[in-house]
Image (cartoon, rainbow over the protein chains, first blue to last red):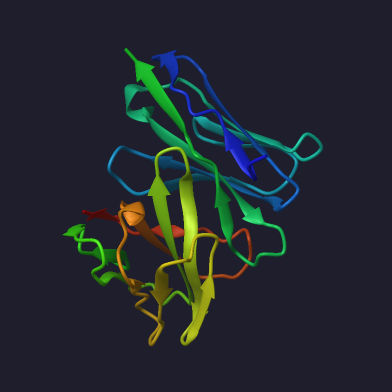
Amino acid sequence: QKEVEQNSGPLSVPEGAIASLNCTYSDRVSQSFFWYRQYSGKSPELIMSIYSNGDKEDGRFTAQLNKASQYVSLLIRDSQPSDSATYLCAGGLAGGYNKLIFGAGTRLAVHP
Amino acid sequence: DAEITQSPRHKITETGRQVTLACHQTWNHNNMFWYRQDLGHGLRLIHYSYGVHDTNKGEVSDGYSVSRSNTEDLPLTLESAASSQTSVYFCASTAGTGTSDTQYFGPGTRLTVL
């Protein structure tokens, strides 16, 4: 099992819909999680972080963490074509100071 | 504005040559990281540093080395470039040492080894 797993996609959603991106993680990964957005040919940029069980909302984005199921998700409401990108899930390595383990990313395509 | 830069942005080299990729940050962050990104693998950690003269190996460190002589720079050297090292390389930095600290990424270097 990979330490952080994501479905590679592409996930295709119509404009205005809710996009749901999912990520599972192994025991080696700690309880700090990050969602990065990466446009083609660009560097990753942080959009959300979550450390506690439950939901965290920031504008159109909601991150959800379920420690019992080792599952973290990102919901994007009112999806826009500009949200089309690859979304990387990352978790802190347990006992690993501030080292991050990244998933392979999910490609999201929002079509008009 | 404070930032993190990488150079060159694109590099083509031949197998067996030594290559150095530069990373420079002006945030005065103690912690710096080098990743490579390949299709299907996401970002994988090559080397990292928690301060001047400190370097540590990541999960894919074979064939790479780093040195940290000042806070701002962490150059990545490929001792003898191999085709398997064709990739996009990202440098990142963070101020704190906890797993909750945000890593900020440079623009990346696309390296092709022929």
